[in-house]
Length: 211
Image (cartoon, rainbow, N blue to C red; front, side, top):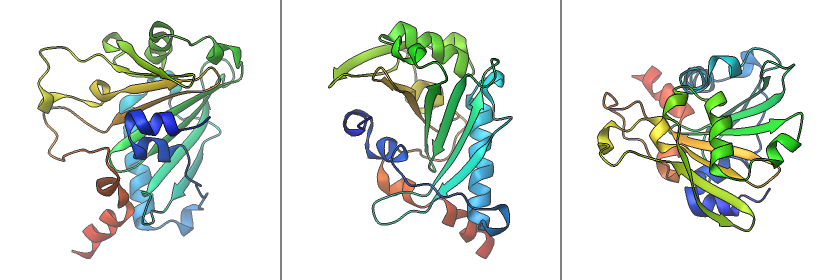
C-alpha cells in the first residue's frame, strides 16, 4: 500500500515506520542502546495492547538505525489472537511514535473494514481501555480511509494519553494505527511526531551510560 496518504495526514515519521528496512540483529550483537530501546518498546506494547494480543510466540525483533532522513526504530512482529495466530501484528516504534500494522490469515476480514464503526470494533479487541475507543472517519484519499480517536471537548491537552492520539487507516487490504507515547498528566517528556525529535533513540541510552 502507498504510504503517501498516511504521511500527508499523520506526518512523515508514521509513514516512514511502515517503509524502513529493518535488520534482525542477534542478542549478542545488539548495542546497549538497541537493547534498551527494545525493552522500552516491549513496555509500550504491554501498556497499549490487550492481553490477548501480547507477543507470546513466533516473535521477530528487528532494528533500523537512523540516518540524516530517518529515525532509530524497533519493529516487533508476531502472530496473535486466540485462533492459531489469526492476526499478524507488526508494531514499529521510534522514541515517541508507535504504529501497529494489522494483517490477517483471513484477508476478507480486513476487506470488510470500510467505516469507523467496524475499525472501532476491531480496535476494541486490540487495545487496552476498549471502553474509551471512539474512532471517527476524517477523510478518504485515493481509496484510503483515514481517521482519529474522538477527544472529549473538555479534555485538557496536557493530560492527553496515547489513546487520545490514536489514528487509523485502512485501504481494503491493510489496516494500521499510530499513537504518540503519552502517559497523561504525569509525563515529563514532551512527545512529538516530527522527524528531528525522533531521529536519535538508541544513542540516548549510550549517552546515559557515558555520564
